[in-house]
Image 1 (spheres, rainbow, N blue to C red):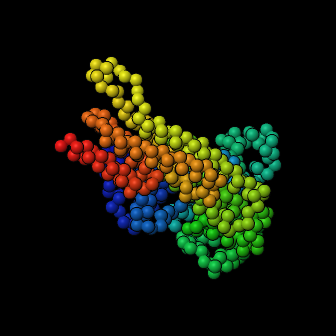
Image 2: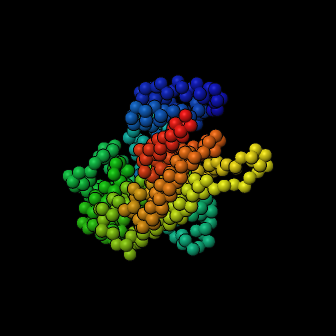
Image 3: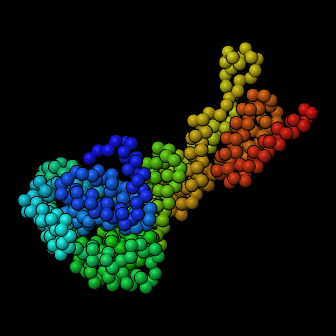
Length: 477
């Protein structure tokens, strides 16, 4: 069902006023309509607006479910929107769900799965929870076995592997399908674990660690797939994600990263390493493309928090696989930063030094010296580089660039000090349009000075410029 822009705006304004109770009724009716195969409502639009209502009231977004939703629930804690280029066991791209589901429906288990899904849909609509639970378990068992059977003998170097990958849309989807099958194979374990967890674990206390270790040993001791599901369920609810390492250390009984990598906790803790690498690589791309500095700062902060926690909680072997991954991402990030900030003094000089330009016909006719006004593009690049330089100072404990940052920072400070003196003198000794030009340079210099030294330093330079102008006026009088 499509809506015009006007009707959509009107409906959005109306839905924003709903209470969470009314939004739950709306969600239930929308999902019932979708399950019946009908299109009486704009499903996606209404569900999106309902989610906004729940978020605004800090309420839980409850849905009645569907066969596909119950299929996904088994591996929900594995799902990510984006990932690094290399597949991380335990992390499944959301974009892989659709091709894997269609593979199951069309190729692997169509007839049997179709019958179960039809019965499951009827049970959902009837509100028959025992039947829903029974049919969901059957559906997961069918899909897990179907995927595992399909991938069991696939050699990554074989033509058959490439054929199946092409059918799914790429090797990444096929590898994600393997993780999905592992999660489905442990049945309703995830739900059993999260029913014993708070929605958010804000601060993990020592006693809490023992409780969660006890829960994992009770529910997830069957093997690595079960432990992965349990640990990821806990990690998703942790406010401090690296607290999962405290739990893993207790499960394994050791704090060396190489020991944990060889244990049944390896996949979940490897996911934490992946989640640390991802914002670092995002930051690298942003730095190379001169993205807004606040966005770079956000990604660097995400990386820094996880990297600091990893260093704090584990004894890291830098020659081991995980240690090498940590070294590699730090090095790549440092190189990306260095390649940018090393140009900062030169860019500031280009933007703020008042190099004379060649006189044009208008200048000659007017008998006035040519004026070189600040170039907006040069200033934009200078702001970006100075902003980046200031931001990276907060993350030096995780980046081997202390010497480079200190060297560039010292040059920038020296440049701004000299430029500040020069521009104040220019204001004192110029008149008319030349003074207006000098004032433009003063403001640009004050802005960068403010970024490096703080607001007081920028304000001081502006006051000095005003004092120079006032002194000139006093002399004229």
